[in-house]
Length: 307
Image 1 (spheres, rainbow, N blue to C red):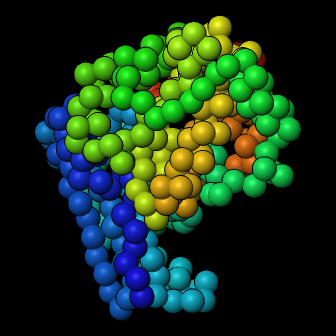
Image 2 (cartoon, helix red, strand yellow):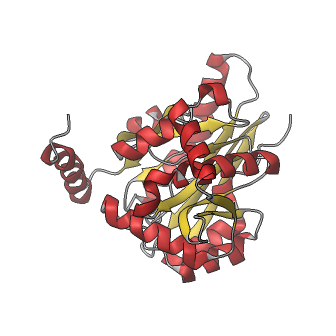
């Protein structure tokens, strides 16, 4: 049985970058038994508790069962994940930890007394099927080309930061990423794993960007993206992602996780590429902090009038 492929968020450079930026200590967890295998990465704070660092979509957790039948795979999962759950229970969780969409069964955490929640992301398999892409997206890519917009991989990280900043302002959130952080990440990951794409208008000005973390043979991580306000109607965002999908396919990615489906307008944009909506589970320990976080999560959409 072949080994589990390394995923982008397990790369040594990614762990080193998070340690450099946050001061947290990355710790790998791994076990195998009878052909089954489980791997995970923890980030440990000063008090020994576990954290999900800022700008990390998930804590990596991958599993492979040696069994072919569903009941056998479930038994293998429950046996393999038990020590990991116990390690998390023993250490405690400082903030909400999110697992990637390949983690489908979070009952062991609930049984161990964790508070379990659910969010969503969109995942797209490569090569993409144009027949599944919304025609409006395809027209927007054509519009961008007709207006002289062009896309390429770029090392102009100031241009990337500028596009990210305008999106942060419009959407009222912050990546807290500057050129210094992006330079550091690129230096630790290398140019193959760190892929920054920039769409420029006919005058050469940066219009839209996305940054992707990539490992051949695995699903890429669509890490961050942004666009300048004046470029939104020109199809720059559509063009940069279409180029990225083709480039990543050529580079050996099996697909891409577009990382999130919780801002309504952004979720609609991602869905129209033909991507699948998949749940991503969160776990945290019961505490006053968790209760406060739940209250904020509940109040935010209700104050905005959302259902």
